[in-house]
Amino acid sequence: MRELTAEQIRASIMNASDAEIDRMPLPGLHETVWADREFLGWRDPTGSPRGYIVHWVDDQPVGFMVRAATSALRPGIGAMCSLCHTPQPSTQVVMFSAAKGGEAGLDGNSVATYICADLGCSIMIRIIPGTSELNLTRDDLVAHRSAGLRRRLQNFTANVLKLA
Ligand SMILES: [Zn+2]
Image (cartoon, rainbow, N blue to C red):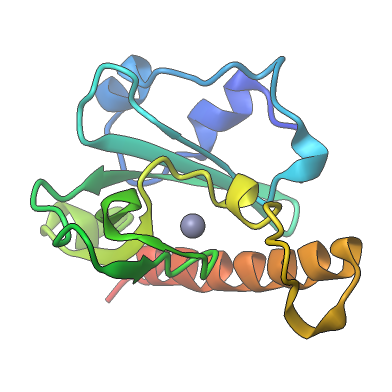
């Protein structure tokens, strides 16, 4: 993804109040390897249920705040993130909800889905197991997963933005 500045990130969040955006902690932008990311995702380091996802939709940074559910999936079962489609232990996948933007969000409407607990999908899709899918090279496999992740994130974003 293209680089984002702190100002762009704060201006991109479209489902939080100004006060929430002022309090929003930012990840270390200087350490971020932008070329290896489809979106910037991070959790509030204070341990609150809040997390943030920012990505580019065409030429516009679009971001939203998500909230982790307090109830966890049952340990010991397999789970899959709906964005990166990485199968992993259920303790590493959490139900997140996002308040809708605009009037719908003020009325209490939200959308929810299972996402990697640390919002680190871009890291997950770059971990290649020894037995590789489909005989693809590493670069082709990451490109394939990256395209899927970006498509699913765009769809989820469209649902958050949808006014009804
Ligand atoms: Zn994921």
